[in-house]
Image (cartoon, one colour):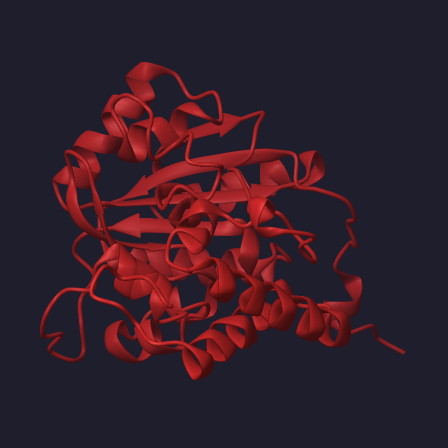
Length: 258
């Protein structure tokens, strides 16, 4: 009996080990790269995109701020997939945010969380800020950082795919064949938020904690832990926690639920 392609994919466990970064000139190349990465077995939570010029199928009125993204609980790509009709709908953590020296961008995956300061505030508050600081955390050289930032400012797209050491050659090949340029391999990966349940407010990512009053923080944690215990999914638990907050609290003028 012939095995399915899915069953033939190697199974990896543990944490991803390396990050491969490339820049693409147009959105069609990005979509192709992302779909091929997913087909090869790269987990969607380990793929990041950041870019300015996503072609929207729907006129987007207004601008979503950092606070809007977090308070809205946009933890999956469904909304942006409908708006932009691209591989964004397949990734996690989609948001529109402001990056220093670049401006408003659409970011998906771990790089979006990093840009929002999910790693304890160290990235968002560091000198230079934005994309440069995020890429520096994975050990990228300043020359490469400057290249990526310049090309992002010019309207191109940066893709980061993370994987195990055994996957890196394949990731490089996929990105190159899809049109990726300035490909760089780093021996570190993007920062992640704490996985699993929370024991107290101090474990919440800053971009979550700062939008919740002390009481709302407790509500968020209780709802998150309860859902995570049942589902085992960080993403689903986060959505359930924000829904519990929205039902129990009122959004104040300063952007805090209280």
